[in-house]
Length: 416
Image 1 (cartoon, helix red, strand yellow):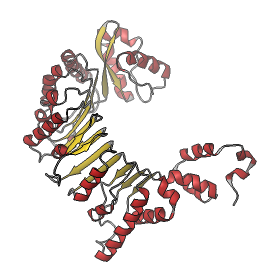
Image 2 (image 1 turned 60 degrees about the vertical axis):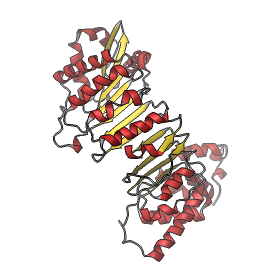
Image 3 (image 1 turned 120 degrees about the horizontal axis):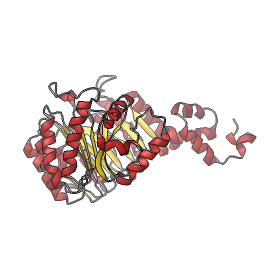
Image 4 (image 1 turned 90 degrees about the horizontal axis):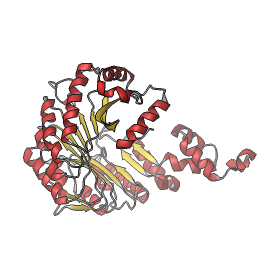
């Protein structure tokens, strides 16, 4: 079969153009191109195997055989995710078969390891964790969620510690097999349980940190994690707390332990939302850099949680603007507030000599209700002349752009 360049219409196009075209195609089309010609197979392979998710054990074995005998496929892998569920297809293999499968998996991983930048082993069965080679020279991101943190996992993190930019590690172990904390000098994002925080020592590049908090964690456990953060002596600017605990446990230590915080994200399934609001009232005057607060009430975790109205009402907006005005008076830097249980995102705007909060909506119904509510508020009169409440269905891009031009003066929103 001839080259793709044999056709006069394509012979004038450089190979880079074909790379760009094939890269933008859906994977189904890329798979079709493999059988068209050798040249197209070579180009398509670079993108078909760039991001690989293995959801079944048979697909895992098939992937192993492919990369072992296809150098181009092995060199193309950049993101590798194991989604294999243990024993979903067959019973536990015999010791002899398990040994053979481990050998195949290790050989395949050794071949792709020099090229992988993101590795997700959340659903890799424990029997195969030892197959992962320690050295991944280009690895930036490592995600793992194991029932038991094995020594192999710890050694893997240790060997790649200086390269990792993102680490997501969750384990039910209360203690790790570590003599001292692992230094992670280039880490940017760190997601973990509070119990594991003292075992790692990020460098000054860390900006985003997430805690997943379960009901089994005590106040003492959280305090130990906060003490570890204080010992890091770095400037964390974004913090996410997700889980089940009294709000004061996570909010009261923040001003002392995270003084440089810019973005705060809370997912707390508590029955009394006013308790959260009261704790935020207490920390805002002490936070000199905080710009954004996002609060999500996870009702799925508690059957008695107070419910927010499905639709935005005038009464609800009256209550919410009162809360925002209070928070604005407590913090001069606060400029974004989002409470995900309703349809509004509030942005602080300083225009026409006013310091006020502007509700931006993400659906048509809420936008109409909110706009009607704003027209009843006298201090919005001048703003309404120039600003449109945005919604996904809005076709007036010119007005929307003008809105963002005004908003971007104060807090740099993108008008994409």
